[in-house]
Image (cartoon, rainbow, N blue to C red):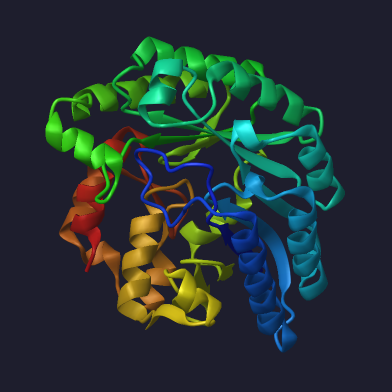
Amino acid sequence: MLGIYIHIPFCESKCNYCAFNSFVAKEEEKEKYLDVLIEDISFFAKNNKRRVDTIYIGGGTPSLLNVKQFERLAKAIMDNFVIEKNYEFTIEANPNSLTEEKLKSYINLGVNRLSIGVQSLNDNSLKFVGRRHNSAEALEKIKLAKKYIKNISCDLLIGLPTTSCAEYLSALNTLIAYGVTHISSYMLQVEDGTLLKEMVIKNPKLLPDDDSCADIYQKMVEFLKKKNFQRYEISNFALKGFESKHNIKYWTGEEYIGFGLSAHSYIGGVRWSCADRLSDFYAHKKGMEEIIGDKEKIEEHIMLGLRCFNGIDLSYLCKLNYNIKNNAFFKEYLQKGILIEKGENKVVLNPDYYSVNNLIITNLLP
C-alpha cells in the first residue's frame, strides 16, 4: 500500500542544529508553495489514483500553516487518493505554533496522529538549540492535544550539554505521565552548514562525549521497557499498537510518494526526489533519480532491517542471489547471540548490540 509524505519547509526560525531544507517565509510565499504542491499532487494522481494507508506531513513546521491553508492541502490529498479505512494521518507540530483551533481542524480533516517537536524539557537546553518554546508550553500543548488526538508522539534529543541523564529520564517520565504514546529519541548530530557546527568548531568540548550519550541511551532503553514502550527501531519506541506505520514503510521497502521541496519517493523500483531549490521546485523539476537494482535492494534490506524489529528475510535475500548464510560473520554472530533467529527465514539483531549496529551491518553486506 502506498504512503504519502508531504514536506512543509516553513519555520519561524532556524534551530541551531537543523540541516533540513527549511526556512522562514512570508504568507505570500506559503500560498505560492501550496499552489505548486497541490498542482503536483493533482498531476501525479491524474492517471495514478492509488490506494493509500499512511499520510505524513513533515517539515519544517507544518503547524505553521493556518487553518485555511491546511484545509486546502488535506482536501487535495483526500480528493486525489483512495484512503483506506484504517489509515494513519500524521502531522508534525511545534508547541509554540499549535493551537486549539488548528487541532479541531486537524481531527475534522482526518488527522489521527500528532508528532510534537519537544526536544527537551530543560529550558536551558531549549535555548541552546534555538527552540522557540519552553518546557511549560510543551507540556501545556501536549495536554491540549490529548483532548483531540489519542496518538501523540514526541521527539527528544540526546547529547545536549545542559541536560543530564537524570533530567533526560525525568523528561521521559513526565511525557509518559501526560499520555504520550510514542517517543522518538535522536542523538544530537553536528551537521555542516548549521550554527551548531560553528559553535563546536569554536569549542570542540562543547558537547558531551559518545560514551556519555551511549550511557543515556542505554538507561533510556531500560526505563522505557519498564513503561511498556517497545523499541521497534533504534531511535523509536511505542506502546503496543502506536508504532509509526508510515516510518515502517521506509524501513521495510514499501512504496511511498513524496511531494514538496526535497521530498523523496520510491515506486516501482525507482527512487527520486523533488528539487532542493524553490525556483526549481516551482518549475516542477526533479532532483535525483536512481533505479534500485538487486545490489542496492540487498544493502538496504540488511541496513534497514537490522535497525528495527522486523529484521532481515533470508529467503528475500536469496531471491536477490545473496545467500547470507555463506557469510562468515553471519555464522559467528548467530553463535554469539548477536543475531537471533526468528523462525526458519527471519533473523533480527539482538537489541543489546544496537549501539554497534553499523559495524555488524557492514560485515554482513555482500
